[in-house]
Image (cartoon, rainbow, N blue to C red; front, side):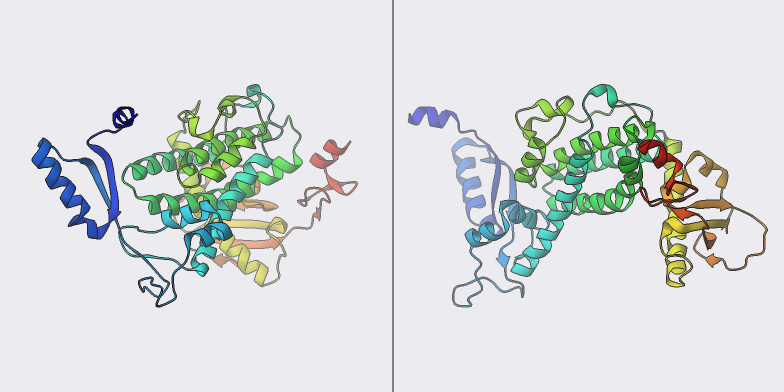
Length: 374
């Protein structure tokens, strides 16, 4: 039995992990002993971490009464929250822990969970691979290119044990690129278009690949969440057939983003930033109540090739009623933003009771919704 156990041991060890004080302790003594006996180091890599301190930076001790029992916080917050707390810190330095800090981490965890929940909830109509299509819009190519960069960036930093950088980039992607942008501009098609709508099929295809990519990034940080999400996948093909999320194959998109489309969306995001700033000012001035009421007129302050935006459905991407570009007109009632002058007016159209967009109505619904209901 002892021989069998010894066969499972490998030397040199892949990794030694301990506190920073072990550079003159275990790390050092192991290195000296192994070098004397075998003329080889006992490990391939060493990772040293700082010590856990309280919110005020004090060492934890019973006398100070500032010790937090790991079993208690696991029972209260769950293992994944504790793992995310570790991943969100620079563990090479002293690591702070407190209940308020763990509650903040719990909020970050919820944002990642809600992202996965949105993806799962909108993939339940996906029944076979034939529904996945290759022809995507520029904004779809852009978000998948962002995902691919995040996957590569995460893999590189997992190798370097830079878990905090992965944690930060993952949160930024979920909150800013997905929740505040791609999900927001997709909801109208997902909720109101017919199942055979080409645009809806494009979005569902993107969501399919987003889920696979995010699971590959999330699983080392939040294995319980990743496994729960994987078990809840509502379709039965593609990457959903594995026994565990840990067995997911490498991500391979059947298409590549065109550089001109990526540049187009980056230019659009600058336009979007200026228009959203103007829309906020228009809401405060009570010109409009919601962005979907807005008719927007835009004048470039610099030499910008606005004709490129004709490739995009700007009204849908900005969630406004109408947008137009102009030059050399009286610049009255325009908001001066960084790159554009923006004028905001309120549409005279009424709101559709189904999709809440402001359009010409037929029996209280826009033409699209009327067709879906009749």
